[in-house]
Length: 70
Length: 244
Image (cartoon, rainbow over all chains, first blue to last red; front, side, top):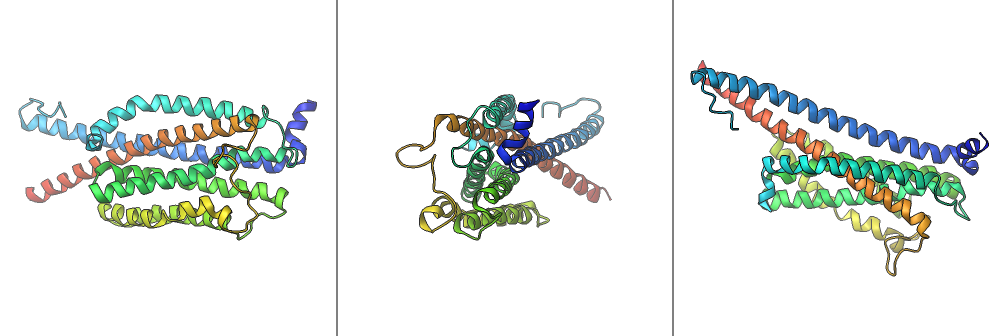
């Protein structure tokens, strides 16, 4: 417990050191989460659109799915 | 080079690279954090506050590295009309902005106990603040047009003009009197820093680079999907207007 206290204290600079690391991790995590959700969202939307288009094409061509190699 | 311009090729390459960049980022940042916080000595002058360096310095390198990458991608986009270069420049901007912000913030948190002030209007700090504004300006401009092509072009020009700031940041501590200390790692004659401090610094730097590659891939994928969505929607509108 002694050393845990010392670690938090950081020789009197605890507030500065831990805020630097805390904000660092928070900012990088935020950018990661935003990038991940934007990629997933865009790819899911594209999937829906492409499937709808494929289904329509398939119907137009009487069931032969010529777009499947896309 | 145009072999890599194909989005399908990029997506295939991205799929191979992403697990590696993720793994390298986790390993380097994990071990880097351990050495930065526990496995390295306190400084004989600065005490434990020196641990801020392991976030601050690699963040500053990343701020400049990402801007350089953004300027190179922008040049490729303007000169060779490389279709992926615009997307990669756009994908790099938020990462560079995040690291530049972190550099300024951690610098402030380090400056208060060491220099006695959160901020000083000296050359290094001011040129770094300008870098942050350049990133924010780029991000605002690239999204400011209805036609993404125009946004990319305007933002690419801003990125290239702003690139003059990067060498100014690098040598600002040599050209002007400043509170900020001069370079101790990237300099002539090798690093003037003990290996116990160099190891966590380099681990963090490599980890940040790998993080950038992962984010670049994720944002690149989002941009490519977004472009395809736009094309399909345009075709739908076109078809609907012809069907009337």
